[in-house]
Image: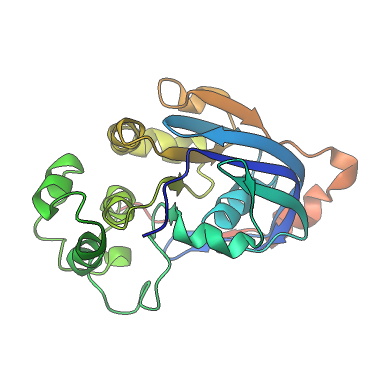
Length: 238
């Protein structure tokens, strides 16, 4: 298990990528010259329209995307390679990077695999904290509807992760998930984790986020029309 991280700092970070989440969607996203320091025990709203870089930032911070430019510091130490982020990050809605990420392991199996390595919690504790249904523990995470959000966080904690990043969520989606998000991020704050939630409007995260961080791109630096044409959604509420 990797050492926990108290701070993550990025400087002049530029990323162009295509973040995705099964049964949710995929888009072209662009983050340009972004600098910020994230601290443990806090929830950060990354504020920008779809395509302004919030989603690809989450993808990068969980080890799923490479940056074209910029520097990364973990606990104020320069990281030689951003791939180390996979050791710390949990991508909310999916979980941790694994050869069997969506390929066969059930939620229970993923949690138990992590607990064997960390011994920090028990399965029963995580089931109770995140209100996981016994009927869904033995399914793959992409097959458990909206419970995937809190189940993936439980998987991350089981594996000792300390950096939890959501995909980009619009205001309506946050509203529909508010009770799950609110309960889950409270647990993460209590555990000293860093939580990042990209969305378009600060007010969508009222009483959830401790800080709101703008990630808007200047219009002349981003062909908004081209980006929007690349976006496709397959969001299904179940």
